[in-house]
Each structure stands twice: as C-alpha cells, then as structure tokens.
Length: 81
Image (cartoon, rainbow, N blue to C red; front, top):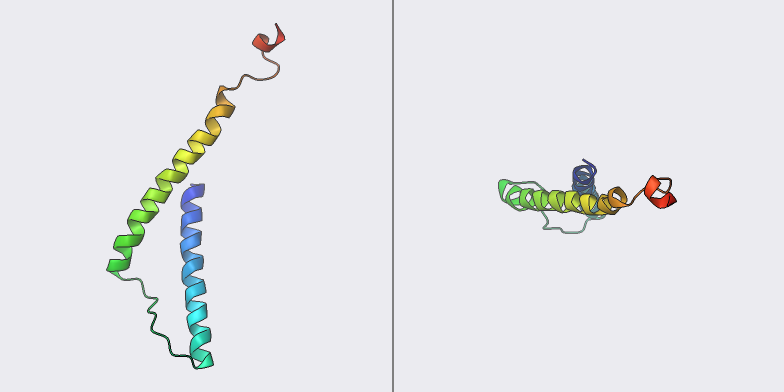
C-alpha cells in the first residue's frame, strides 16, 4: 500500500511540476514544444512501470521485515539459557 501510494504521489508530483514549468515558460513568453497530456501511448509505458515498481516495493518490504521476524526476542526462553 505504501509503495503504491509513493508511486502515485511521485507521478502526480511529476505531472504537477511539469505543468508548472510549462505554465511559467508560457507566461515568460518562451516557446515550448512539450505536450503534458496523458495519452494511451503514455499509459502503455507508465502502467507496466507502475506494476513493476509496485512488485519491487512489495518484495523490498518483505525482505526488510524477514530478519525481524526470524530474530528471537531478547526475553525468550532460548536466550536465557
């Protein structure tokens, strides 16, 4: 869940920052040729990247938690002997 939220937040910030820079360039009178609209071609690229990053984030979370779940507690009977 946290990974999906991070990916979506990153995408949203990227879109907002890009549009902000484009708007500033337009106000300043600079010529631009960047089209910030999201088309089906763009979605064909973004969606697989989202899925891959989601699974990488889930795998990283599982691997990060694994040592904590395998380590015995300090007060367990095995450590007292």
